[in-house]
Image (tube, rainbow, N blue to C red; front, top):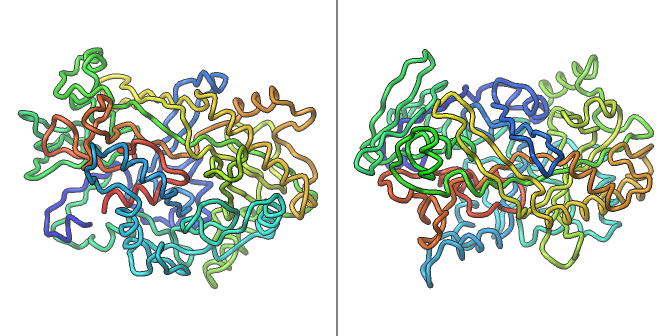
Length: 509
């Protein structure tokens, strides 16, 4: 949208669908979108050696707005130290490169329209609508109180002075309607004559001549192959799986890897597809001793009642993504920066790993997430055919420190199901099996159930000139190729602490 405001002509190619859909808009639609929807592409990872050979399914938005159109809408920036770390990685000597927290905070504030907070950390006049949840389950309140009893302070703002604490999340929506990148930044320009938007259109190759990006080859919704030429720049924002794939198909990547697929090398950048980072998550699931939580709220007469309540009054469970509260803690050292993020869900967390092991019932779940994982994976080409999906090696829990942190987070939050107001409503803990839960059994539990938290990043990272694995410079320009930039989470040299959607949108400002 910034380019359009400066009177540039922009051709925008989206491989997926329009973002206009009721299920995409309403908060309660999230769990249906994660598992089975035309609005997502479900990438399957290679078997993961550190997770017992399991494959993870990682959804990617197949819709205008990408992941911001299908995610749980949690608004999280990470902490200032994340961005100061980027700044130190990118600068040479004492150069100012503009990635420090003090440089980026104005961008976060300017894009934000917060319904409650307006202070040195938050804005109220931007296009991205950020709100408190208008529906909170009683179990969520119990979770917050119980975690406080375990010594974690209450916070009313995870994006303020400090991230540490327990409390309610804020969400990218307003009055029950999602505020995605599509709604916030593209929709206001949809009638701009300088914007040429093509949906269901897949870019298959970047056209490069004399080490300069001059356009793209794309296949439209009729299957026809066409070309579009650029007078200024080509900007790639295809996500951390498809961006490196597209670069490699265009001859940009590790020369030896490209040779395996008979692709001529235009720019030998061995970092393309490397440095894949994702937040690993692991569930703790308990059965309730009464009719607590959201079980059955999306079925039968309750679904009709809740739907009517939402349509007529804008209230009720449809306003909840299910993820209402959470916490940031360091279970190994309470005084240090948080190493674990927790999500509380007032229902039993059913996914491909838990279906068949437990029954859906009244219950509750906590997922623990390692905020700064040290494990790194990679994305590789399967073939030179642009239709083929890439090979994805997430390598979750490859680094022993990630496992240690995850296990500590699991032990801490297991205690919330055993005491306080929340513990009073727990009939039994279903996952993990807490009988004689020693370190070996807890490790086995983590390796059996850890999966992606849906935040793949880093596969075309920015870096200093001295870093041979850096694909981009500090202005997100592809090294060795003129007029070519990347602008998505693949540019991150390291992942931020928490949900990544807000950071992804900030990159485009």
